[in-house]
Length: 475
Image (cartoon, rainbow, N blue to C red; front, side):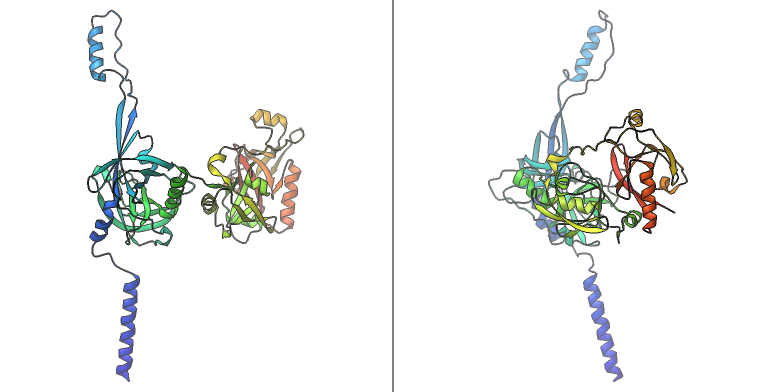
């Protein structure tokens, strides 16, 4: 009996141990087979650019001086015969995605290039032409012509990649050509500076020249395009960034079809929501995207208003502004989409037909009529010295007539409003999602918020024409 129980316990321990080994797999015994299979599809890229030769100031010699001819000959030799254009070369990496010669790389690798040469693992070289590029994601698509089918790789699903998974980077670091490095995924969903950023962070060695090269998973699928590193000295310190294949594959499809990107456009200005803003709005959670302004465009046509919180877009919940921007950008231009917004305590569903982001950027806001002129009045509220805007105040501050609200003339630096970021020169145009054109309007909104049991009041603040919501405590 005891012996049977002992054997059962040992069997259970062995089963659990095997399960843990299966769950936490060790490093591959070798990366050689993977490197051998994918290397033929990875390419070195050399670009040439013609740049104007910089004219350097030379010595000033008085006309008629005996040294005039000497210095003229010296300068001609130094300049190589005058201000002739120079050729500049740059190196990068890329990878083939189809047997007919489409190649993916970084936009910054080929930006401004007059000539693009592709070198394959076998040593063969081909000139490439630019099909299209997307500076927003730093992706470019090239094309080479070959008489024979070319070896290629396919995109994997970066959304299934996990932190801790093994990855391999292949490229042309520092011009050394076809170099392989391995590491793990250190983090996912990193953002650097772009609206559509979705970077995989890896400790696989990435250096200059690796730009545009592929990041492979252990199945040999491309899960990222090596784009940037974080380094104090320009070399790899184990913090590299690869744009995820989830982003790249969609961009490449559009470049292949149209030669350019065609992203959906809502036509709103938005900001993230913190806990104070959520409380002021009566939201259960600090999620969604808060609309701060609605210029002329698709959202205005659909009835979206400043102060709306976008909670769902095309059936997908909106976590924050970054998620919304990516989701909208990936949606087909001209598609009619249902969008849920939270407005004044109620959920509403609006149908919006998306415009195109690339042709819409730079559109101005709608003009709001200015209020009647009146004598300025000052008052201190919540540690903030406010005055009502008049035509005279607008003229003195060089504010456009479209700006309405209350001007912040001064602020107690110990106040919560200062801590939240309010500054002298800001204009408060809304309080509690209602327009405020007088101090009485603001006082009324404060009282209404207190009567409703709110601990904070939502303000729409404009600084240098840019709107932003902030919640200030009323206690």
